[in-house]
Structure formats: C-alpha cells, structure tokens
Amino acid sequence: MMGRTIFIDPGRCIGCQACVSACRECDSHRGKSMIHLDYTDEGSSVASLPTVCMHCEDPVAPCAEVCPADAILVTADGVVQQADTTRCIGCANCVNACPFGVPKIDLQAKLQMKCNLCYDRTAYGLAPMCATVCPTGALYYGTLEELQAERPGVQVADTFVFGESEVRTGVAMVVPAERVQWPVPGGLPVVEINGKDVRR
Image 1 (cartoon, rainbow, N blue to C red):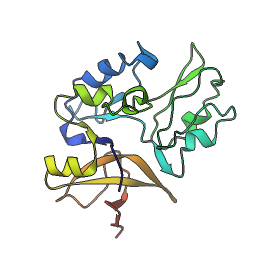
Image 2: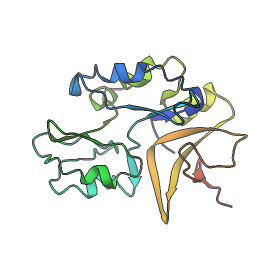
Image 3: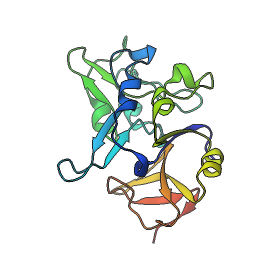
Image 4: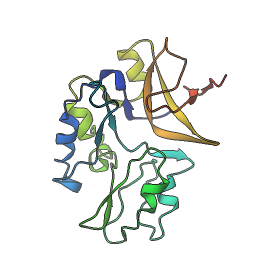
C-alpha cells in the first residue's frame, strides 16, 4: 500500500489558484509555480484540475529514463526530482516522455521545471505547499488510510493506461466509490483501484 503522498480529488477543485500561488513560495524554486491548474472545458465549464507530478513508479519516471544528461534523479522513497540545474541541457526529452504532460521547459533559462513534491518539506514530514493551502481538500497529503477515514466511500486510482502501456504512479487520483465505471478525468482509463484489477 502506498505511503504518505498527494491525493488529487478533482471533484473538489474550485479553480481558486491558491495551490499555484503557494507553490511559488517554495524555497527551492521561489517565484515559479510547479503546479498547473488546467481548465478542462474552458469557456463552457468552470471545471478545473490541479496537475502535479505523478511520480511514476512503474515504469520508473519515464522523464528520468530519457534524460541524456542524467539530470533527473529519483530518491530512495520514489520522489522524482526536478532537473538538476547544473546538469539540465533543456532538450525537452522529459516533456515528450511524460504521459501526464507535467514537465515544462523554461525557455529563457533552458531548464526543465516540475513538481518535486516539495521534497524540502516532505522529507521532514511536512505537507507540500499546495496541499497546505487548498481550501477544499482537492489536494490532500497523507496516507490512503487517513484519506479514507476522513472521506468514507472514496477509492483511489494509481494505475493508468496509455495505449498499450500501463503506468503506476506514486501520486493517486481520488474517485468516488459509486463511480467505478471509468475513465478518470482526462479520458485515461483506470485499470487498478487499491490494488484490484477493474478492467472489463
């Protein structure tokens, strides 16, 4: 079972941008936000979705696997780090390899930028900046057991399908238990919930 991580609950997001503002305050990348707030049907709906790094576990970090400069490191506890500024060459291989569209290239600095789960905080037991300010709990930091105790009836998805490939992530998406017919937001079919195969 997954440990302490971020759970994204898209049904609770109100698009307030508090997470984006808080992310800019993180000491490791002050002034730049590593979280993206996506509006799923802009102009027709107010629906929004925070996009953070999913910290892919299997396969391990496709972004890191394709980096020719070995700039993207994965910690022993599975956190996929932002590119090391002394090694990153701004080639954008990581942008193309990420199935979730998370890494961005700062064209001026020629550097990759992405969420690193506020590792300067989470390594010491503190919640990431985005989760500490989210007024609705759309970004929840804790264990699966804590989440389910606080929100009875939710399930989480941490395995996604992209064509013929499956990706298991360290960050999970919250899905109401009564909605076990997929796909999750973004049109990605879920194949596993809480370790159970749900393919039909």
